[in-house]
Length: 242
Ligand code: NAD
Image (tube, rainbow, N blue to C red; front, side, top):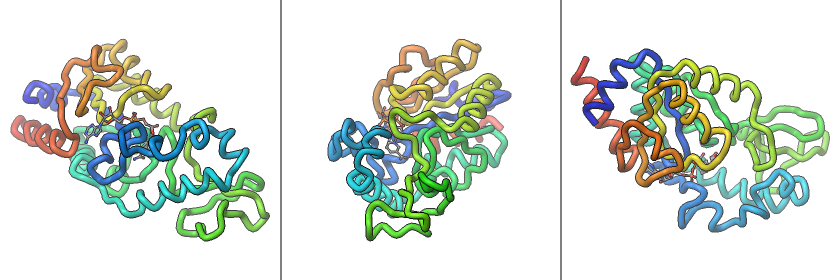
């Protein structure tokens, strides 16, 4: 922990990559755990863009379930610590795979969302944009004034990632000399490749996870445990060095 804190303090460009695990302590289960979304909804039936296009009403039931769990959740100590690190100019940006908006709610400003955000939606016919508060979930799927089906701006399997977010993420990764990888199993590409690229560029990789991930074998420091417990301790160590 002390050595990792020193690397962060001495880092010139520190970036974090986060996944579903950082929001677990906010009460949002990751997708692959025992109580995760994929234990309730078959990934093949609900997780693909094709599934949505084939049967939007059915897939919207899962989305509505997800939205209700996001709506009841608040940021936890891990989200707040990253926001504080950004305010202290220790952390440049958070690249997140999460769609739950909790980094922004905790106060992080520079957030790159690789997989979108559930609070933004688009009509699939006329491309009109909606905010989540403008949508009624009483009749599924929600429809636009033009009668087109509304889809949340979240990335389904089989869908390309938002181009702007990808460009920003690769730019940050190419600049970073220290990378925090928090609460992600690193199985979903291209997010999973980002720590590998950073490592190849010579960056120090610090992983915070309760378990091993697909990139654990390449990391320089592994801080095992809950992100909401480890990150505040890590920041205290950094503060001791200032
Ligand atoms: P994942 O479910 O594949 O892996 C979660 C990882 O977090 C695991 O390695 C697990 O060991 C770790 N973890 C669990 N609880 C933790 C904790 N308290 N502290 C630290 N680590 C913890 O998640 P992923 O790698 O992000 O990939 C899943 C995909 O599903 C992503 O694309 C993401 O968009 C999406 N997703 C998003 C949310 C959300 O927005 N909150 C929730 C579920 C899934």
